Image 1: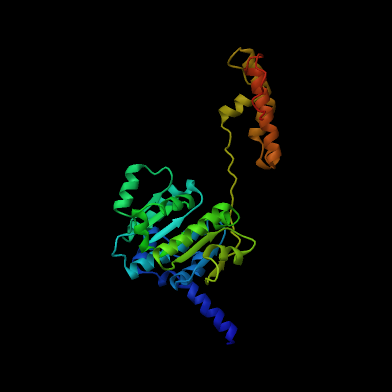
Image 2: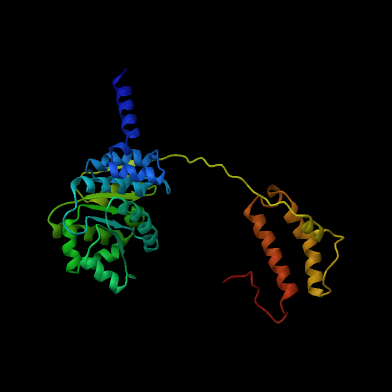
Length: 322
């Protein structure tokens, strides 16, 4: 066996046992979650993070990047211990709308192994802010702007002296924005405050210059590892079309009787028999082959509903915008 083949086999073996490198409590939580095999980003990133390296994970959305970052960090927290009260992990995301989803997701893992997880942003109420100051969470989810505010406080800044890991989500959103500059400055201030460096893990979608983005993330002259995962996700899509019942078929039939004598109903139903019946009973490929077909049909239905049902005094058409 050649050296290249041996090296390739060893790498594959390491990837296959990525979950086995984690703390037993993390492995138990994985089994409870029903996760048996790591995804590609998890296979490649977990060993690197466990080694203490700064890592930038570049992978498609939905590939398990959050777990790829948090599972090894939680494992290291269990191994190293977190006896002193303080914030040990900062999870920074530029999109505040994701904070609540991330909180539920990360809290599930944290609570399974005995760690507190909380969120801090501009809408956090006073009671929660006071609680976080008195009893800091082990893992705090926040935004770049809120990190700037935290650095001006006294209690939370004191709790951040225990910080060991920083996870930055959506790095591609920050790398080309002034918010990214603010975050870089805030992280340098944080290093100066606690008097030491910390491990950084970045999560990003596909970017054009991975090395430059990694340098932006960790800072100049600091080592890093880029985990770049490109893969094709195969999906099977089934188009389900409801079969018309006898009642609907008879209602759409040209010979069906009209249950009401209202002129509007007669006009609308007559038109629907000609257009709607063909749309409902046709195969998806015939009418719904493109978005243009859907738009054309929808516009026709809207125009007919308006002209049939609404008063002529209206001068603004509901399907027009702007």
